[in-house]
Length: 280
Ligand code: KMH
Ligand code: ZN
Image (cartoon, rainbow, N blue to C red; front, side, top):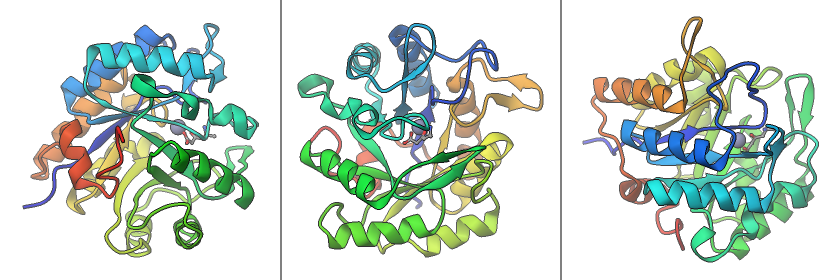
């Protein structure tokens, strides 16, 4: 019996725009509505960024608070906040979601473990900055999802563990297919999996047209998958997804076709290396 598959829905992101798709959620209510629909479609977790009323990428704590409250009013889905934000943000801005406490505290947060070209720009994560964010995540009792755009970023997790900043085994997210970075190919996924610290769990986020095919690749390897408008706006060639929930529904169909059950938010804890962490 394989473990249930955790589907994460990346609802907003920092790069997708309303000009590209009118279905991008921006307000707390829109984000929560899509989150609830994603839960119904089979997702166990949402990965969120937030936006100003004008749609500008933000990591503002109060915008995160409003989104998290609206989501939790509607659904039991786990909430993972981004600490990546948008290219060019400083570390305090990126960590806005980590300042929330009590009932508003997120269940998980991302930690990107290295610098990478990101389209025509650079997603800047020098080692001191990675350690700063790792300390902030640890200090509020969360475990990170280690976001890796390249295999060297997996090795960096081993250094972070030696320094006591993350625990191993951990949960990793392989983001494959951003222009300028490692692309989404099956052999690349195999290489990433082989590089993992023992006992670690993983999710793969294929970007663009590789998003749904990489749900299949994850399903057959016993892993987990991330889909959603942050990484891909199309359900099929030329057909916009009417929200991340449509991409989750398609991912769920593919997972079941591969013989995988879908994890509930509760099960997501026990089938991933961040088991004890969410809600801690
Ligand atoms: N928007 C990218 C520059 C994360 O959410 O942690 C970074 C990103 C990573 O999306
Ligand atoms: Zn993100």
